[in-house]
Length: 304
Image (cartoon, rainbow, N blue to C red; front, side):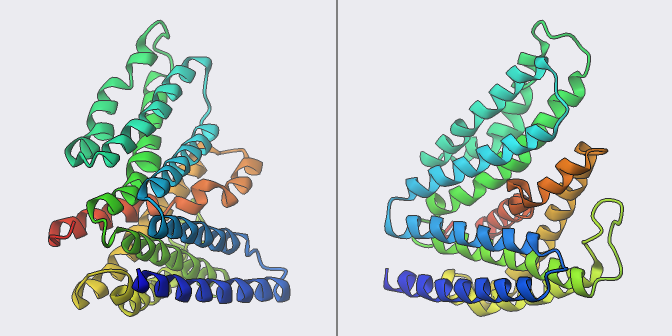
């Protein structure tokens, strides 16, 4: 507990300093759009709060917090989809799968946790759309719903499983993962905003550049090597490789969700601008980094 308390104090001090620096830069550089960075910093505070709950109280509290996060993320995703009345029952089934997925985590049934959404929900999801709802728009409705479940529920639910897979280290690993993911995003965005020239996919997201990716990769890897001894039981090699893994997977997660939003909100510029500060923009990278990091660590280390 003393080690965790010390980590909390250090992280609180660092977050406070970063928040003050952000406020000063935003005031001095008011012509630049720093909204995305502000959203990321708020996410850091939110996850810091969840980490505190997991450290000082029952892990079930953080489980419920993360379940709420997946619900609101999925809700925002559905709000972007052009839907019909026939899709309402489909969405209801999708929402009902959230508590079931987190129940598998609570009872630590890994086998069902890992196949429930990719297999059973995938097979059963078409049923409410088939019954007396016709065939028009069937594929788009079912596939877009399954996509949302895989990203917002299945992907993010791995954050909750860390604490049940390894009660001793779970909270620290979650904080380690979230901090590195958000640092990678902030550095990538900041460098792209001020120095980025070579855009990765201009039609999807003009703010994602190769310069931002390179700087994010270097900084995330360096920070990972510095903080892994305090938050994780990883060895030096994986403390170094973890930063690289999180940076790569976070980059693809952010890019994928960005393209997804652009496709869903094509022609609706107001909604697209609003989505920049939505739950989706806060968790886009985590939808990839959470499952990738979870399964790599579980494969190579016995404590998982």
